[in-house]
Length: 63
Image (cartoon, rainbow, N blue to C red; front, side):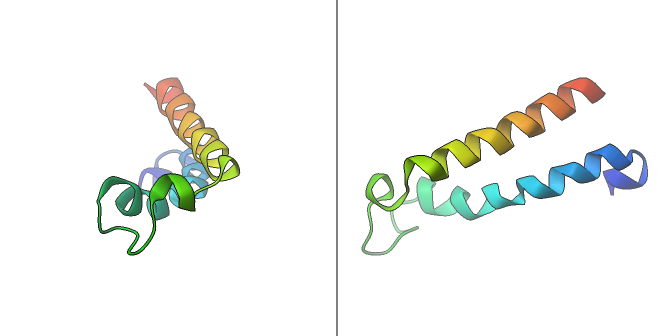
């Protein structure tokens, strides 16, 4: 809905990849039979950091 007011905010859609990491990494049963630190790679972490920084920078710029 924010994109209706500012098209640049539509770039945040790329960050939806972060959603797939939220529950599995926070809850003990999020990855049945897996341990998060063994399941995810350094590349996964770097991608998440990249998208999180993108969100923070864009929101800060708009505030």
